[in-house]
Image: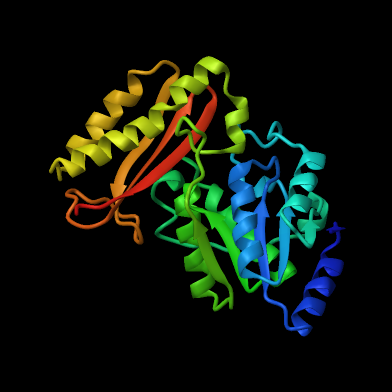
Length: 282
């Protein structure tokens, strides 16, 4: 497994693989890998001839007072997991390598970035799109694999790839969960044992909403209110948003008359967690 820190070298390696007729898969990460990341790597390994993983904690997608400075890291553990998963190259640049003095460009996807996480994190997706566009230009993949837990990110990146005519297939992988249902996230590491119990309210809320729909409820407001009450009955919880929306446009749906995305963001003490499910009426 190659460990590459320079953009020019990563591009050379990818060019060589492409000339050899290899299909390149890329799994972008911010490190501190968990089983959810391992699943993404497994899909990338299965679908491509060469597998690149990137590790880069991207400062431009963090807002003021967020957790950029304290984002968890475990580089040696990450590299061990990458080797075990069959990664061919790990690209792990410095901030200075990715954003040198004089860097001025932006990549912006409008409309769908205004909803869900975009409301409370206005800079977030502009940071995501510019860094992922750069990573795509550096690693030159045919396929890029992302988790469905970050559902809005998945939709935004598909839009970016479509709009900018990037010849890259974006593959979404279902959310990987702990045995008790908590969606795997590097930020789960911040939770105390008591906070972690309250974090289970996200999945409980999603399951309760799914049950309401299965029993015939179609009024989005009623479902969201029920989920809100359930989550707030747990200590340490503060709701950022609960939304029922179109899975592609991310616009609100007043009634569930077709497949819908139920997505939520909840702050458990100081840790912001997200989760989602697709709700179907049949």
